Image (cartoon, rainbow, N blue to C red; front, side, top):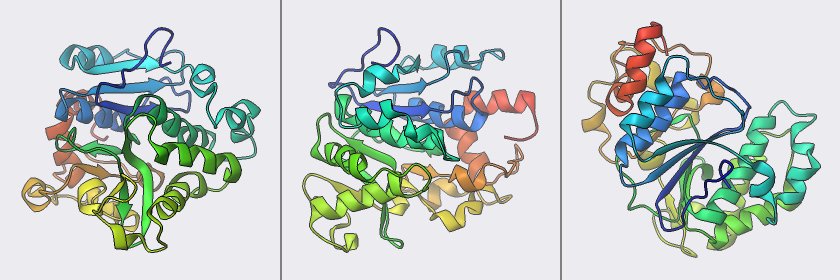
Length: 293
């Protein structure tokens, strides 16, 4: 369950975003991601689940967001109960994901997202993504980089009990690596996509259903490839974003690469413009506190 007494419904269009580093003070960029999904998808249930027992609300941002968006829930995560009885239970309970690795939070996140979607169904997104358009009509898909031929589990939707998420959990049970960045995330998603689609070249099935799964291209679900992450932060590049990228639903900022790059508020870059439009409450809060995101 999410929290001590909150259970999502399989009948809702759930959107899950997580903070798995036990961080009581998520950055404004994370809150912008959360708000963008609530802002653009008012009929969805947006769950920001955290592993920290306390989240700092000193500036009132959480209160303001929950008052503005009835569809947003900020909840604690009972990991032991969530993993209980799933194919990932032994990996989680053994605790190896947290040792001898620079990425314990990433490890548990890669496990948890599969379990959440398998149990309750919905869309899972990393918190370095911003939603720029309603997407509640999109189901059973994985974001896909057609140039690199990589399926990315950073953004994926599956109905509850979908075979794809079960296959992901079974794959991780046998192939989980505690200290390798790609294997447990895009590596696993790509391997399972190839398996269920029966092809080594995923471009062959791009935008076509295979085993009730669709691969959604960069222009829709990530926008730029990871080597081009800096495009989001360049000054004066964002004012025509909406007209130039009309197919986009989600943009992916690749936080592993971009997290140390400050974003000057008001620089009219892509991130600045979409944050102002799609997470207005967070944008205003950040602007009151600092000159940078």
